Length: 161
Image (cartoon, rainbow, N blue to C red):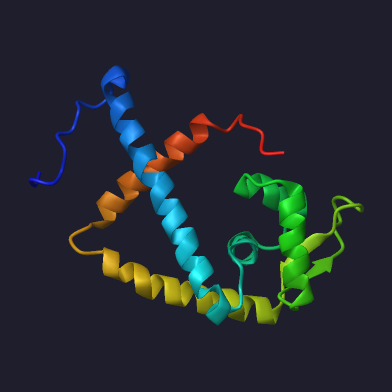
């Protein structure tokens, strides 16, 4: 433990860990807003809004999806996701494809231009994030992801529509 790290509570004691989880929330909110602002600042150079970037990234990670599936995956309203898909389609970054599972809800897929755009953006973001590495280890990051995933799961029942 270094001087900048707070003492760690014993594992498995929910009453002791709750205040520390609130510390995580206190950091995640400002971090999210700053990252979003950074993406928005870089958007003119990249040519992608935060919302379009999120749609492209989701499709790159998961393959073709419907608008409702993307909304659920991102905890965003279908209407917002549809606007982002429309913006991306107007720029030939995504295209629709028939959905064999549901005729009324087309699949949205990346085009070659969309794949090139999201690859360029994530390459720039990875270069920036490398600066945060310092003395962080893969185990540190894995633990952080585990904590955030657990906290996210706690709020799975929150409706975004």
